[in-house]
Image 1 (tube, rainbow, N blue to C red):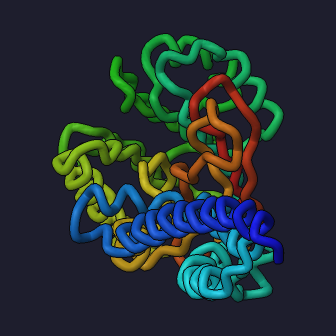
Image 2: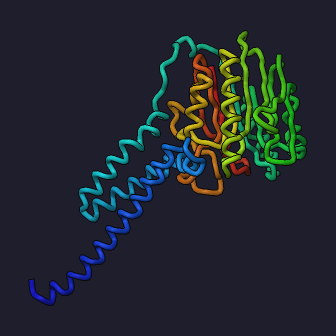
Image 3: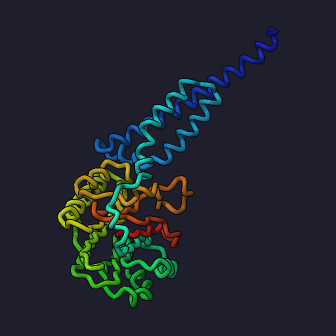
Length: 324
């Protein structure tokens, strides 16, 4: 190589080293965020890092490509190691659980969950979605007096209901086609309502808990959210068979409190076998959303269908469940 060629190549090599250094720095930040999410029980800020498993996976794929471009074998191996810990949390939502084949013959219970957003005034869009999906049970969250008036066209089809309107973002409404043996509003772990409905569907008694937890913005809010979710899970376990817990839990399936909720309530995540279905926030592209709206079921319930319904003007996407 001539002296002048070597001189010209030196700045390019230096720039490549700097670029690779930046890639490693950003990759280290990704690893730190993922690790923090794994120990979310230690601190509420760590728990916030647990919710972005899908985004971490996309970022890891990007870093893999960058390390390949830079021909950095150590970087490629580092991404593979991260993937070993990262991907199982996503794959487990794609695995269907074994179930009793006789459950296929049961008449389905159709449930629609929608966080309508209190300030959203597109009432007719929600009404059309409910009329189109024809659920047996409708759970609406963040309903105020204006929303109760706005869903009046549904009342004839859903003559049985629990209505708890509030001016803040924690009002709730449960609409049912069938008579409710138990219809009550409980205040669990604080001032926020949890609706409890017990009814007979196809000669079987079902219990539905609808709850909306506080967002984990600070340590106290996170602690109250956790307490509410755990106490609801305990009540679900006591309710026994054909029990369903739905709502905006303000957490994702990868948070320690979600895992604890499943354990305490002996519940199963309805998302198993259906993958990640992100519901919030609607103002962001789908790749950046996270799943906050959930349906947990007792182990005797078969989840036949689970899907997103479509935008209703809210910051959340409604979810439809077919349970047997």
